[in-house]
Amino acid sequence: MAITMKLKHLIALRNGSIKFRRRFPVDVFQASGKQFFEITMKNSDTATVNFHKEYEALLREWQALVDTYKVRKGADVRSPEERYKDALRQRTELLTGVTGLDESDARDLILEQLGSKIDPLVRSVLLNPEAGPPAFTLEDARNKYVKDKGIASNIKKMQRLDRAFERLQATGIDASSQALVDLKKLHGQKWLDALKKYRNENTGKPYAVDTMRRMTTDLKAIVNHAITYVDFDTPVTNPFMKLPFPDENQMRAVEKVASMPDHFLSEITERIDQRSRIPELATLWRLLVVTGCRLSEIGFLQMKDVELEGPQTGGIPVIHIKPNAFRGIKDLSGMRTLPLTGAGLEAARKHINQRREEGAGADDPLFPAYAKVKNNENATATAAANLSKTLMKHVRAVASDDRLVVHSLRHRLLDKLRDAGASEAVRDPFAGHSPRSTGDKTYGSVEARVRELHRWIERAAP
Image (cartoon, rainbow, N blue to C red; front, side):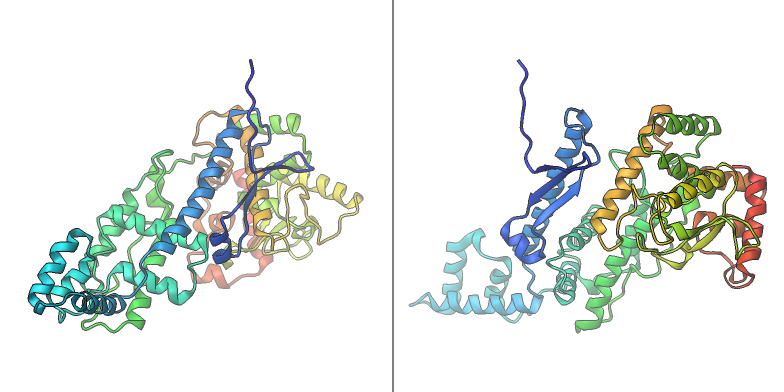
């Protein structure tokens, strides 16, 4: 006999997708302004194991968000001075409640009766009211930062800070007892060493260098905020400043993403051509191959971002990676103009002509099945995730090696350029990295740079 189970918090969408939508508790909603946790699921077939795995993961993520808020809501965020004043007040109340005994005997009676139930600071103040407030700790610094910046209701930001402090605890630095005045440069080095040694227990992957920097930036900001707005008797050192992070090449020895081999690329391309239910996916894939761009950079292009006649580049067809109506750019190094060649150019011509016949204008998306409005962050993130999932189905059907993913196309193109003898100044634009030298950043026309990139990409024959 088959057993069916109705899953909660699911909404069927018109396009066949399924949305997970679960209401936050009232206190979380009142603090965060977010009534629901909702996201379009990657899997839509409710009969598959992958769907149920994703469903369980979303349930856990919802619970983690709620738990994060409730833990922070119940945390003691008073400053050391405030806790000390409260302890003095409680001391007075406790002693006042005992009559017929002198202060010393009354204190002993209180300690005997309350035992371990008494707050450690109140116990300390009972024994010595002149002890003064406890040391200002890293935990105090975080609480002050959260309060002053007004981010306590931002669950996502609070989760990010919590993750950094959990990693700090795993490093052996106890934020609740680590006084800021006792911070040394050794603490920063210990933190960095722990980040470099970290490996995800499920994938074996290390932290990306950007992740290391982001987590450290949070700690650095918290300590700097305390240094600025708290009066310390002695100078405080911020050990998270100017840490010598490894570069990406140093981390590559443990990198899990491998370059896409040519024979796998051919098989995957053929499979997409034959089996993809969305014709534009084949064009998108070929543009990834010839440009080395990130998936979101290609998936969210506008029609005007591709110039087939190359009016400003000496007739060389190009693609412009820049902020548009569907996607932003985090830093200026990500803005660049790249030449189109080979199968990518051929596919782009055919696709753009078809889009024009459909009535698409310059501001319309090149790939309407994936591009979403930029100011809807959830829609953009969901579209990117769905696109990645779709392509990965084809990749995994051909290549079982977990190191081979869509991102492997970037590694492949850069390896081809490196093998052809291209310098860093040529490889960096394809990678979307900032140029290493001032000259590469400043001098030369766009046309001249595109001509050089075009010569090298033709030579590398991607």
